[in-house]
Image (cartoon, rainbow, N blue to C red; front, side, top):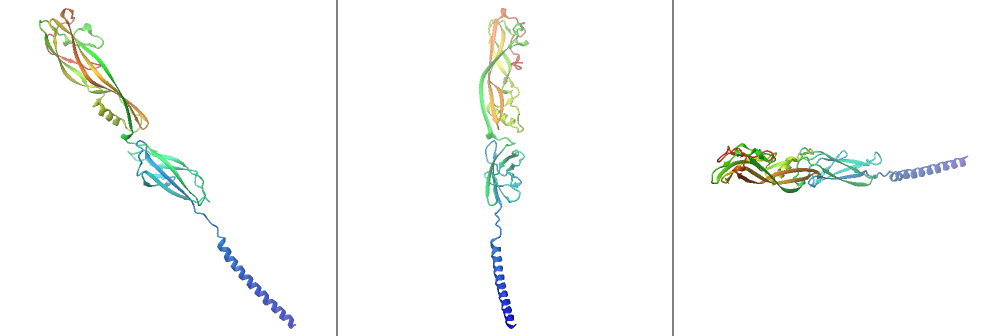
Length: 316
């Protein structure tokens, strides 16, 4: 019985020793397994948006603009370039395949503008840079954007005044105080004050076709070429003196105008404008005497003087 007791005692001690060793190995394995089994998570995907903003008329870079990529503000980095960096965990909600890049409007400077950027699909741990060029349309006049072509043509018109009603017709106007007869045997000096056209007028004014007011600037350009241009000619009175031969009557005085007709073809921001002007370059006076027996006037205007007013159509 004692032997049996010793045997069981030895067996129990051995079992306890094995259990202790097993426990020790188990503890070491768990510790090592914990170190290597932590799952690796890649950093979020990185999206960089680079936006260049330029003036649609001058092509120059636009500084100080308010630019956004989606809902993220872009910071200016100089020379009209703006940048935003966006991170996104692609294991969750994916970055959209397109992002709208916007430039806010600035009063009295330029209109708002947008561009759509296509965004390639990337995974966490990757990075992508997307580029956009946005052109803004100015809302103020930019002289650098104006293109002009001009053509010129000389034209002539002649009109006459007469004291002989039988001659009245196209370009010949009856004027009562033009009835002048020289019955003497010597030439007679006659002086007439004639109101003539001077300066330049619009034949066709440039028409406004866009919200931006460029018409005033186009007219400034035209006046730098033609001088003051109105809706009609200005007038001034010029004296015309001549000798009426003996035994003759003044049949008519003629006024000939030489004009410089110009056509201005403007292009600004892709829009065409046309303006036409007519400028007086010279005024020529001439007279036509006839023998008294061939004259059909009444002879009320013997002697000197009188005013002859030219205007309207060609004359008034």
